[in-house]
Length: 399
Figure 1: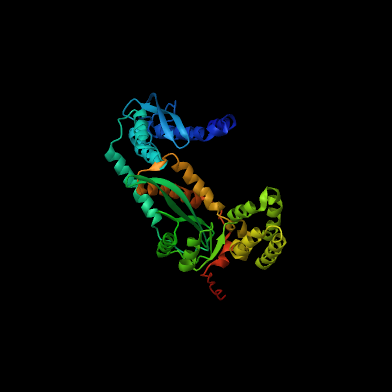
Figure 2: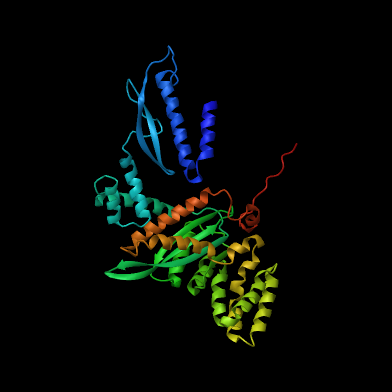
């Protein structure tokens, strides 16, 4: 055991951060194989024992593909019979890797031809159309189940945003809107709630999208955060009966466009004082004072502030600890940025099913990452009061 601990300590001291995990996997695999060999031979390595039932016969080298990279294994051999490590499946590496490689390639938007080249580079024959079809069906089933799953509990906050992609339709290339919704539930956890594809961001499309979410169980929504879409605003009032928060970042861009290059910094600082108030009423008072001060010199900007007051300051009526996350669409825009980065590889999609497959897989991947995060997006103590179903406390048990 002392020699083993010394080897491990040496490994930790000499390995770089990039190689440490791979070296640790190799070290652990080596120890597992040695322990298995001790059991198969009836004695430790080099030990003379009357209980020995077999002899070692050197090693054979093998490369083991892991998530941490390629690990070089030295698999022991026996004089009598054969040995294969229990943690490896007795199956060709390329045969195991092919489905995973192809699925990963499709999820990343790699074309069929590129996937075929990748498979050939692995030393195998090209992938057939039937194989591609079966793998796509497998991905589609997972994405469909994810996007149609029931939504349980309350979802106080809902972020909605749209991005556009190009797709072939009836021999033409058209632009379609991809809608994504992200919510935070009463446990303070963040999840991707759904996505949809439509020709434009019209009210009818928004309404149907929100109704689909409602049919899956979306309820308890207190605030919807989005950009200034009149159709979405009307759909929110019709379907969810929730408050609407106009993205503060987008609003400030519109405001500063009216301020002129010279006055942008001053106007931004003035309006910013309303956002740091302690409560909603103080913020509204400060907002009106700023608008009145700007009215003589920049009347268009003042009118813009008058019209947007309720929508831009809606977040001030919610817990102070949440305001930094609910005043804009920044949380969902980061997700949209990742979607655009991955879909730009494709360029023009052959059909809407291909968009759903790729974007849905990206959303599923992101949702899984959020699910395994230790910390909540919002603390349980601050978000619990927003739930429509308050926690019922049981009476104390009598002594």
